[in-house]
Length: 140
Image 1 (cartoon, helix red, strand yellow):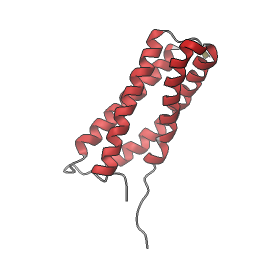
Image 2 (cartoon, helix red, strand yellow):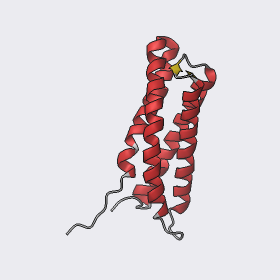
Image 3 (cartoon, rainbow, N blue to C red):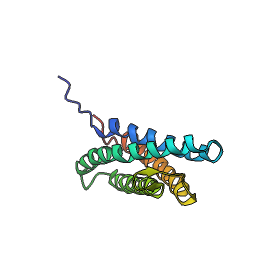
Image 4 (cartoon, one colour):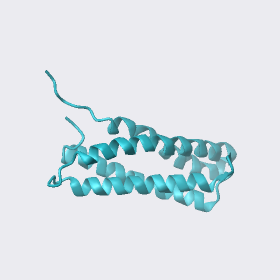
């Protein structure tokens, strides 16, 4: 009988990762393409910000399962902090481009927080890879 478990966190992170990455690309493309690109970025930011809550909740469950003496605990803490930073930056970018419930063209602060969120997201993913492949956390 196979007793391996499959944690939910790795399956859920693909949604905010894809949405946020594409949102940053659309943000940068909006400098040349205009409204169609920045509007798409705003929609992707909203979807990514909401789906990230589920991914972070599942990640928090996995984090709580790590023993205090586990050698990967420091990487897990950094991974969690960077994920929260990415969420805050992308949520800020979304808020900065809203007037009420209407998306408007992003100004430089909204674009800058999107790019900063992408940098945090990349570092978060790299640490997530270390957790799985180096420290064997979150797998069977």
